[in-house]
Length: 302
Ligand code: GAL
Image 1 (cartoon, rainbow, N blue to C red):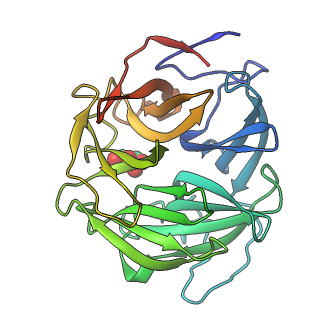
Image 2 (cartoon, protein in one colour):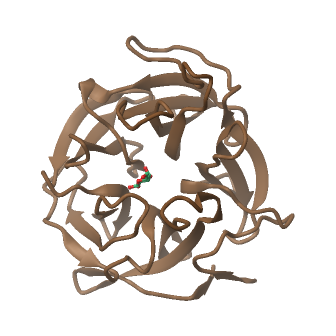
């Protein structure tokens, strides 16, 4: 077993840099699949696979400018290249496996590649975890703005999409339809005016914890978390976690593995100008009494 050094751009098993920023990991049939932003060439989302969370094998550029498109709902815009012929922006891709349909469903923040005014979410699906995803276009849930986002799947299969709305001032939580293809209900408008971004949810001992960052672009800031007894129940106010830069990171996602709770964050390169050098961190989370704490570690063995 090897150690992962925090804060650097990790390499895959072939020594190539892993480009899976703002990502998400799911476990499926013996493997972890890591999806994330890959902004090189004509790529949007890449997928890597590992059995141990350390040795990652590149699988595919699962979403690119060339991805197949297929509409599925009204008022969805299908555009993987903008009017100027440039790439659009697809950020923070998250993927869940839907037991009922057998599909892997991706939700990802969409912008037009020129500015951040669309504040929309795009959906894509695939029959396998690491195949070519079919792009289903972008929309604004119930007309709302939707920027930094995450997905969370509860034990009973109920899934939620959480995203920054009202110019990032409020964090919206939507319950998804059974097939994870659409929003079914706006269940919460959380922390009004607190400007929370980069949400990530984990369930520990039957309670739900949501980490998020403040809104300072690529620069890291003080992480905060909140707790609830149920996703659709009342969420607490925000409590600080980590230090004033969340140990130089912004939340990507949280997973549970071998009895540990593992926070994954992005350490963005500079002010975004060194985006392609952006690295990754994993910090263990633990409950101390009823407080969630983040442990700073230089390196970690998973
Ligand atoms: C961050 C956000 C990133 C990206 C960046 C652009 O706040 O979390 O995903 O959108 O802003 O400036």
